[in-house]
Length: 369
Image (tube, rainbow, N blue to C red; front, side):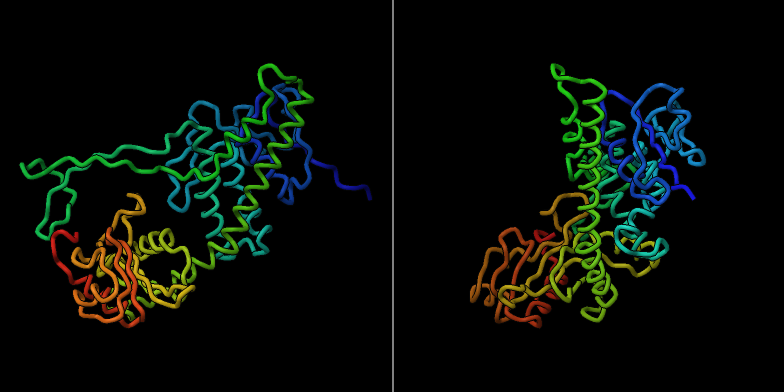
């Protein structure tokens, strides 16, 4: 029996971009297109006979393995996990149909395993969506104007009317993550205007670009699988047990320190949708410092408003104090410090840290909001 014929993937010739470089790499990691050759051409007579064509041809048809996004009327988005705004590039189209297979294979998981879906969505958010957005010219930030009025507790609430005490508040929101600058580095591999840009040279440079894009994709996936995902499980356990720490559910206690903020926001949103009644946002996160064994408190930032924004800072009369001076104000011995900006503090013991967190929740001084 003869060996199975090697398949061929087609993409356009000339200047190459990150989306088709990544798309070709991903296709070649699948069973169907494993080790496929890549032909770069704009000749329709050549492309029409190839097994798969991406980023050229003006057709999106998964049944025929055609994955272009340049045609008029194309508005496809990933369509799962809340990703319903960013238009897909050829990389996103390939990822939509083959991403779960690639993620599962590289991580040694069954395609139907829940972790595969979690990682599939995380890789889109942290890697592929940025490629899609940059290729399609989507601005990373957008301005948003909302009308707000001060409420009785000093916090601003969004309103619809135009009373005299209502003000317009402008904010800038991040539309997608772009953590790699991969598109710029792939673009830089193209031949310069005064260099040899023959098809042979550009094809060789494209192979380099595809391998670079794929290598970074796999590195990001390995991080998400081996570091990000375990951290998510720590935060999930803390979310599920947080009312055992404090009945309000506003204090999160981590079993061990890990990156927690992004996981918290996503898990909060899941809980808010599942159990909207009685839901309370987490205000403070407690964890033990691995180096000194002491306890730390961090105020939870406001999603999308920067790391130093805070849902509820620590009380103003604690800020900037250390040791005995802090204890004299709080009445809880063993305090180590509270940062002058009120976003973090410390205590010798868990019991003391928890007590300070509960006090901070009840603090109603307007300057602490």
